[in-house]
Picture 1: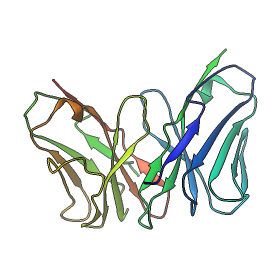
Picture 2 (picture 1 turned 90 degrees about the horizontal axis):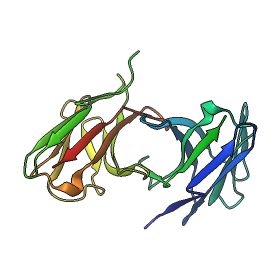
Picture 3 (picture 1 turned 180 degrees about the horizontal axis):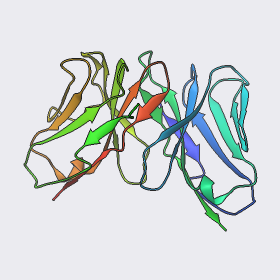
Length: 111
Length: 111
């Protein structure tokens, strides 16, 4: 079945360092979504990418969707302690909108 | 307006007991999803409703799991004869277009 894989599983950075997480799908995706889950919290939608090669920015966060629409990345510039959490990518399964989530990348930031 | 709410937030059940988990989606959201999240993992799809119709229940792990949304609003996920492997956080999400809004989840512990 369809799989979404993320690396790395964990990332520990010093505050101010950059961070990148990578997402790969076993199948071509119509779109990819990114969510953030703070410790003890629930997933919160960050962004959706739809077009091949699309790049979107949200302040210090840069999201990319690969040309083949099978991979994606999230890059955070100059991490802050507020960036702590687990970042998930998710791709739709079928046409009904239910999402297949990766296992996430857990980011910790040392002040 | 209010976000997605879930109750109870925590549930401890003895093995073999039945449990019912409730989800109140955002008013007007047509789509409703249930996910199961094990510790350190991404959410895993269980079932999907569009209004009152259950369009996909392929993720339900066994016939002990049952979900309903009789009036197209509140949804209930029922687990019969709970087993230890059912211990997890159960997340409900609602959606109007593609962005999914998650509730805080119900943490189920089966002892």
